[in-house]
Length: 116
Image 1 (cartoon, rainbow, N blue to C red):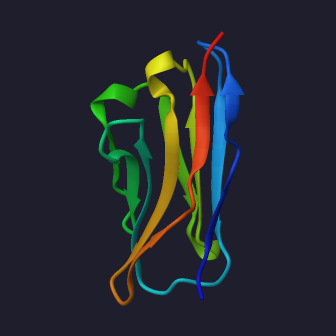
Image 2: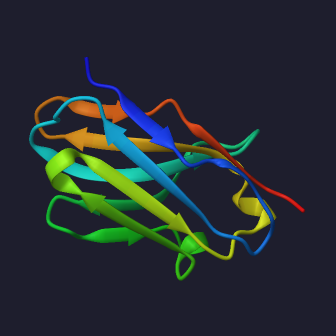
């Protein structure tokens, strides 16, 4: 069974940086996209950033210019570099991998807290 394992969350001060990583326990075939979503208390899960198998990247407006998504497609690993963090970035961040063949995979989530 495939598991996505996230790491890199924690507490950071406003204006600080943090890097999230997500690795798959097994190879996922025919990946269409890899990405990061987040969910704050009382809110729905929302897209943060996503990169397709063709290398097309989409960012949510609220992270443009601050966050950067990257990937190592060969090993089904995706990263999220977060700079200039704000209190409103506080949320649980989830990794997602979508496969044309087998559908969506989700990580367990990692808490990111931005506070002084």
